[in-house]
Length: 435
Figure 1 (tube, rainbow, N blue to C red):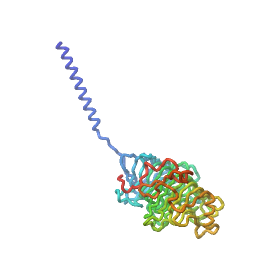
Figure 2: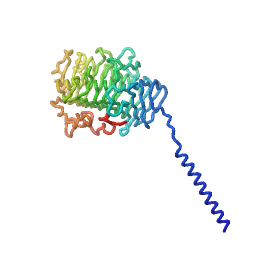
Figure 3: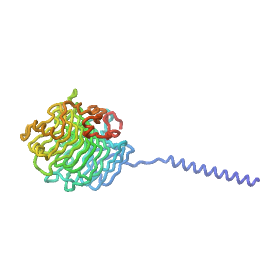
């Protein structure tokens, strides 16, 4: 009995010792610090594949180039804040790629490095995508903005990567007069590229500018832009489906005119081919509507000029100060007159000159344009409220949905035709947000 008791005590002691050693080992493992060796600064050239983390914000310093053959991968929820002394810009060179795939509940955010309440348009540059798709330039063009990089080629299906659920805030620095970086710039970007659910907020130049290329985009938002919301040039032939513009009455480029859409075949209105001809469907463009304090340079909902061609259908244009649908240059007006351009099935309102032509147009009058437009399904509205949208002019909580039973709801016109795709990932008050 004594021996058995001794064995029992020895067994209990052994188990206790084992438990103690195991517990100590577990505690040691749990308290071992995890070292994060990630460099949370983006600067210079990215020459090999790099994948960011979403564990803390990155700082963008100066012009950062993703070189040909390299891919920059940005996971959902990543925040990238530009240094405001070394103003940043992210340039995806021809042959490089960006894979920035946020989600509706976890978007990717590019913003100013200033604190909440201190951010302002032009705090940093913006994002530039350069591809190998066609332009109408006879030589390989260089992108504007002081970047000194070329774009364009012969591959309409070129792939510069993916951008989904991305917000771009307070961008738009000017490298030189008439050579600015926009919120999101496309140079010869091909149809293999995916661009969906992007919001550009308080850009100091254009929100989106397309120089040639064939990329097809959907679900784009321009909010509080200084210059133009959607700008097309150099033979762009891609498309945009579902797009919104909301202008801030008090903010516009002091040296230029702010339009919902501005488009040219090129800067001098030549007949270079392919003609710039964006295919735009289901837009909602909301101007300042003569609100108190509206700045003088707010301009047209549509400004088609310099031999451009276009297609805009199933859209809503309301509240622009100086014009709704405007044609400039005889070549532009002739293409519309001949059916090479189309403007059909839209609701159109402007504070002044709903349908107009520029002083350089002789082949049509404003009355001719209105007659053709209203004969092709367009409806001229007396007041912006006649569009029957829920709350389109609210700068901090807009709702662009059509009211039940309205013309837009019945016909599926405007940017919101079913479920409101703007919900969840957008931010209409970014200057009060702590990132």
